[in-house]
Image (cartoon, rainbow, N blue to C red; front, side, top):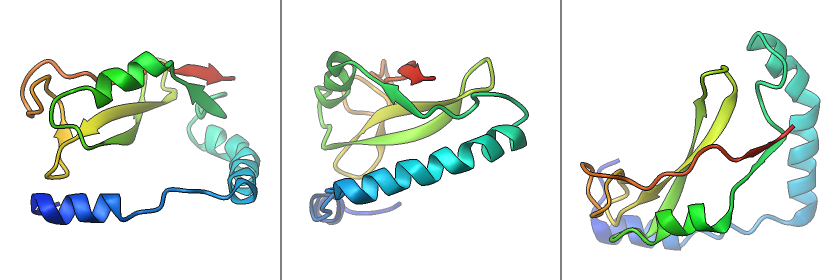
Length: 118
């Protein structure tokens, strides 16, 4: 993504991330139905969690980094080959902040290891 600062901020701030409760429930139910097939394709049991819960401090650490205007979620795989959510900050250019100074170089605050259900 090669956006200028104004383009990225305008784009991300123009998105209404509101999800109606009914749609949220339908999406969760659809995933619950697909989950056994996904787990089977991935060669394991509970590869894909129903959910992961993160404490507020983990999210604050990401959002409090200098130059953070948003955060991004990735799906990663841990040492037990289980899908995990990973959150990173995003700067005004739409780049992942993987550094404490809002850069892409040093000491990032990222969040992983949420409480899995199940």
